[in-house]
Amino acid sequence: MSQGQPRRDEQEPIKYGDVFDVHGDLADKPIAPQDAAMMQTAETAVLGQTRKGGPAATMQAAATWNERAGVVRHTEVSDAAGGQGVTVTETDVPGRRIITEAVGGQVVGQSVQPTPVQQGSTTSAITIGEALEATAQTMGDKPVDQSDAAAIQAAEVRATGVNVVTPGGLAATAQSAASYNAGIDKDDNKVKLRDILTGATAKLPADKAATRQDAEGVTTAELRNNPNMSTQPGGIAASVTAAARLNENMNI
Image (cartoon, rainbow, N blue to C red; front, side):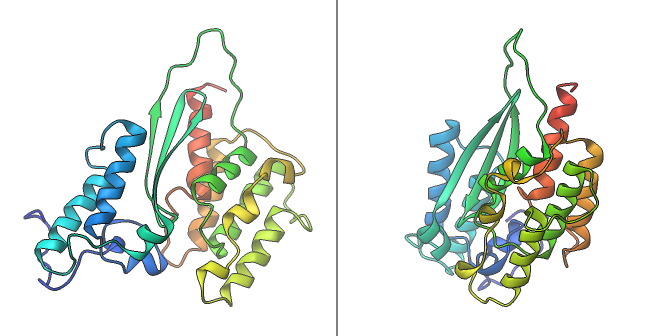
């Protein structure tokens, strides 16, 4: 731990929720040495090296502290990492590569790297529907909650230009899922974002290129309906915002 960080009780482990914006059981899990090793392996396999200041480096520092404090064993692995795995994925869009890192299905880091665009090639703007589909890939295992439902509704309104919830549409389905999940205890039994957002483009009656104004509207909806007044890394607002930025960079 750096000198600038507050002192911790010697028996108190550094948990995922202390260093990453995660929720549920994962937030309360101590970062274990083998979790960090798995993330280092995943980063190296996909990126060719571990990222300075990235999730693997953060996890390694936390795991080292936990091991020295005697709160975890060197061979220990958390249930989340051991059961659901540690992943590093790349999603290519014109001119950019989005790198998403996750533990137990929850995003712990996301970054964007520029990639060359061939001269003479034509690029299309990223639509709101495509941004929602990207969320299904990056945050597909996240149970749908009220903030997700609100963000999806805002995205649907922006995409269609109609300020009415379409019966059986994405927003209506997401709201039903959020209400259902609120009465379910185990995350495994809840409706996930993947169930709602996979194939989102085809489920929308209309679609449009994501703009900064669209991103602001979706972000506001997600924030207002999150008790923590924050957006989910790799979530709906983040995906629409990323799409809007990419569209601006492509001057579309």
